[in-house]
Image 1 (cartoon, rainbow, N blue to C red):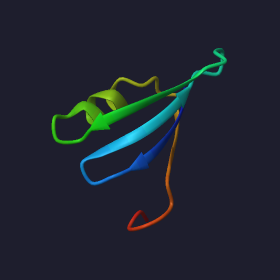
Image 2 (cartoon, helix red, strand yellow):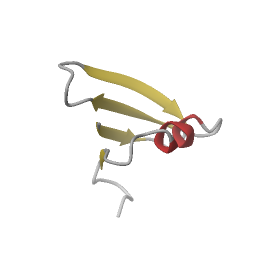
Image 3 (cartoon, one colour):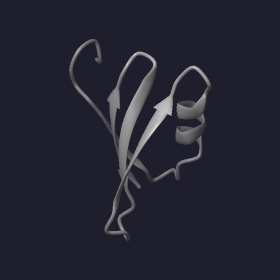
Image 4 (cartoon, rainbow, N blue to C red):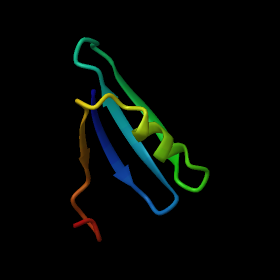
Length: 58
């Protein structure tokens, strides 16, 4: 699984691709209700995550 995310203060927008599929799926994940944390906890261990490299992200 490959996931790219655009971070915002209250949510993030992700685009994900499973290598064997030819489809990109877009989702919005809320931070406050734990949706984002639950999503990342459920990913396979071999997932590749990319985040934006702007703003306060170090």
